[in-house]
Amino acid sequence: MLIHGQKAKKKKKVNWHIATVNALKIDLRDYQNILEYETEHSLGKGSYRIDLIVVRKKSPEPISKTIASHFRDSNIFEIKGLKSSATIQSYYRLIGYAGIYINENWKNNQLTSKNVTLNINHQQQ
Image 1 (cartoon, rainbow, N blue to C red):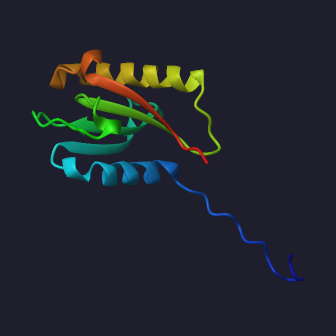
Image 2: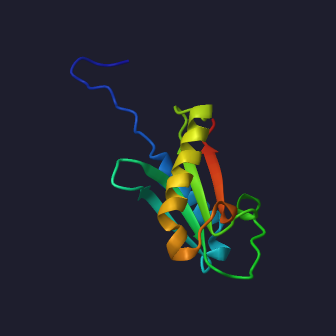
C-alpha cells in the first residue's frame, strides 16, 4: 500500500546477457585457460549482434561439463530472458547470424560450419 507522497519502487531489470555470461564463466572456470568469451559481437556494418561467442582455443584437453562438452572452435549463443521466448524465428536468426559470422571469419582461421555450434539459452522461472 502506498502512503500519500511515496513513490512506488520500480522493479530492477535483470541483464540476462551479463548474468548468463557470468554463470557460464563460473561453471567453466576449470577451463578458463582454453576458453575466451566475447559478448555483443557486431556482425558486418549493420546492427546485427551475436549475444555471446565462446571461443575454444586449440587444446587436446576435453571439457567434461555437460554444457560445453559439445563445444567446437566457435560456439554462438542466443540468450533469452524470462520475458523473451525462444521461437522458430530466434532459431532462424541464430542460423543467419552464424552464416554471417562464418563468412566473415573463414579466411582468417579456417572457420567452417563444421567447427561452430549454435546454442539458445532461455531463462525460466
